[in-house]
Amino acid sequence: MSEFSFEILEISHLPIMEISDDIPSVVQEFAASIEKSDGVIIAAPEYDHAPTAALLNALAWMSYQIHPLNQKPVLTINATYGSLGSPRSQNILKDVLSSPAINAKLTNLEYILPKSIDAFNDTSLPINEAEKLNQTIAQFLAFINGDSLDETNEWDGIL
Image (tube, rainbow, N blue to C red):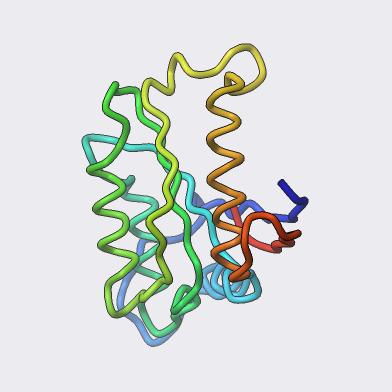
């Protein structure tokens, strides 16, 4: 896989979304980081078959007055303690991302890590999971660039 750069955006500091004429500066800065990216990878855990409230709050902000995800390529990555992975959470997240107020450019690509509590050794994912994740990201880079996987893909995005 070719090299790419990314920025990790934390959502814990975003205030609870409220309808107001004023959008907090922290939310505006968050949206500006998304706008300048080529694509977005949303990595999230699954709790009770759903995305976290904090993630849904961040997406609510991105659908009110500012729309940085409009036609922005988005890849979703989920992890769960359960053995089935997180298909329910993925479906909810994709429904929210495809809503008219967000309108992200989605692909059928996804990465789901079941039994995440057991998936890591001391420092990293097992080789088979790391290879699957690398392949998914390589395909996402191709999706962003409209290139085949054989060509060099460079990506400046958000993880």
